Each structure stands twice: as structure tokens, then as C-alpha cells.
Image (cartoon, rainbow, N blue to C red; front, side, top):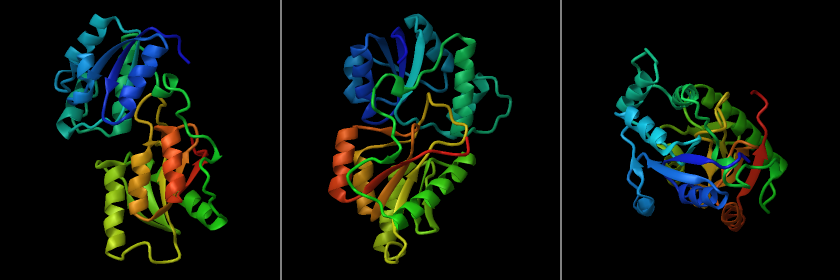
Length: 275
């Protein structure tokens, strides 16, 4: 764990944000919260509301707080225009909107110039990263493991295009990939496909794979799953969720595993071999 100092915590969406704030303070960090979108649950923090169109104001607030470290937590959603504005401010001369991986690299480079290191949320909240092998009580048989390995490899290839961090496979067939709508929308689409009889009625069992993108840094936008992921996966007929060892966040680990066990969904960690 990083020695506590003054932490500028950039808050996105999701349940991990308040958990990270509390864990940081428990560990001795002084915390200043900056939010990308309004969050009523964080009103007590009196957060600084980020305007992506004015990144200079964000940096000014981080300097005013005298931050020693910066951490981004939760889902980060930006429009094409906001991506272009941020990239231009960070010194990228190409006017086109950037994907998530490129924006992460630009953000890290900008903070490095300012002498502020990015740290990952896993350095604040312990026991977040997925382990290797079987995670819950549900065992994946050999056929399900083969599909999980196929889905995992395919998700890594999709990630190399900066497309998304997740996909669903049935046997050796890719059903759907994550896009800007995120994993919840991916699973909702798969549930609709299943209801229409397009998937889930053959021998090929459904697997959700979540991985980081090749070369993705550990400090921002790591893939994550939680109990809500399990609920949506169950509705879509998913029999296993495969995640990347050491690079996927297990949000509310105990509740997540209990939900997967109750839904009879196998949780499996696999290490990437292509980084």
C-alpha cells in the first residue's frame, strides 16, 4: 500500500466510490472528492464538480488542495466532445475523439508533468483484485472452462481495439461485445437475445468474460464486477463469469460471491498471457 498523504479522488459512478473514500480516510489519507457527474450520495463531501470542458479548473483545484496523489474510482463516462477537449488540453494535436486507453495515457502523462502520481483504487481498498482459479463455491467443469478460456482470449482481442472490456460467448461463438453502454447494457442485450430464442438453447453454454485492455495501466478504469453484474448475468442465462487475475476489481467481494453461489454461476480468474 502507498503511504497516505493528500488524495484527490476523482469519483465516477458505482458503489465502489463511497467504499474507497471511507477506506482512504481509515488508512490516514486526507481526501478531496471531485465528481464527474452529480452524486446525491456524496453531498456531505461537498465535492468539486468537474467540468470536462474546463480541465484547467480541475488542475487548479487539485493544486489548491495540495494533493500528493490522484485516484480515479468508478465508471467514467465522457462524450466525444469532452474527450476531444481533454485530449487537446493534454497536448494531443489530433482533434478526433480518443478511446479510453488513450485518454488514460494522456491523463497519466499530464499528472506526471505536474509531479502527481496516479494510484489505483486497489492500493486503497484491500482485497479488491481477483485471484487465480475458482473464486466462489460453484465449480466450472472442463467444457465450461474451455468456453471461459475462449471468451477470455476473445475479450483481450476486443480490448486491443479499445472497444470494451467484456464480451459474452456461447461455446466457441462470440455473442455480443461491450461498447460505450458498458457491461450492464451488454448483459441486458443478451437477456433480450435469450428471450427471443437467439441464444441459450443449444449445447454451447453462456460465459461472460471481463478483462483489462492490453497495456492498460492499473491505476484507472480496471474492469469490475459486483452483485449487480451477477443478477444481470443470471437473467441472461450466463453460467460462468471469467475475469482477469490481478486486474479485475471484485466489488463487495463477500456479497458478490454469495450472489454467484446462489445463482449457480461459476466465478473464475485467469491470468493474461499477452501483456
